[in-house]
Length: 119
Image 1 (tube, rainbow, N blue to C red):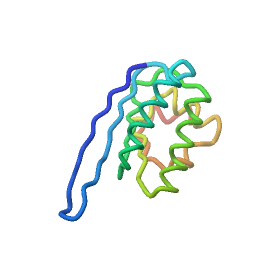
Image 2: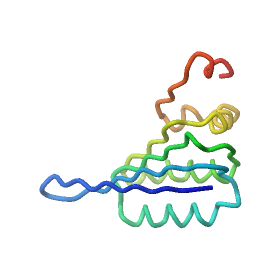
Image 3: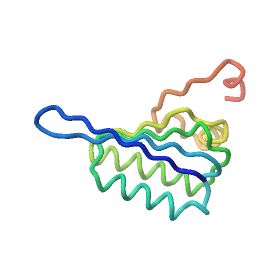
């Protein structure tokens, strides 16, 4: 699993806000748990206003990865920042569909008619 992190800072004259875009590529499974936890800890330590996770290149997911996304979403509600999952891969959508999680994350999911057929 490869993880790329990009940060963006903006200022409104009174305070600075930090937003992150995290791009994941490969298999999101138990074996990446410590690396993923480390990345999230460092990102959350900066009190972000927004985190976007690009999932287009995720080939495989497991329950521990999905659980981390659920915990992250709950934290975003509690702490008042925005979590956006973007470019959902077929593997992730299959898992979300299986466990009824598509509506939970409330993300915009863009699919062609061919991609939409299984759902």
